[in-house]
Image 1 (cartoon, rainbow, N blue to C red):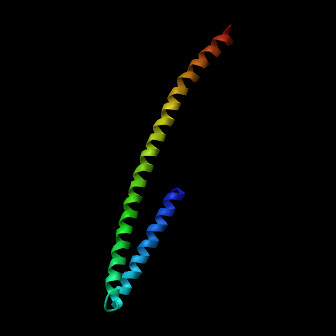
Image 2 (cartoon, rainbow, N blue to C red; image 1 turned 90 degrees about the horizontal axis):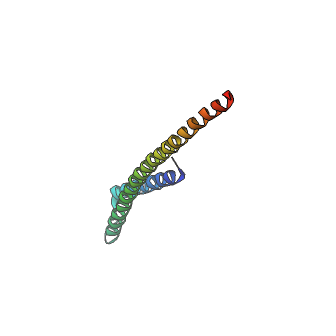
Image 3 (spheres, rainbow, N blue to C red; image 1 turned 45 degrees about the vertical axis):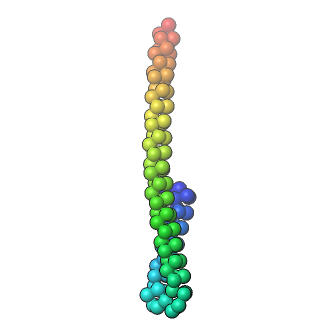
Length: 99
């Protein structure tokens, strides 16, 4: 896991905790009047931000998997390209040793 992933995980956890605390406060009794509406708005905003962060985390996981697969293919291609060159060098050395 790289630093971006761990930072994203930490942000998601902090946001999740904040939503949890807000929900606890709401259960304990929201103040009467207009303030209760503000709590509802904050909760809705935090929940939306949490959903966005989780979606972004999934996007990053997919991108990371795709990058890893592409890197694996590139390594395999490089190894394949180097292997015939190494095999071609070996017979020449053998021929020069026989002469």
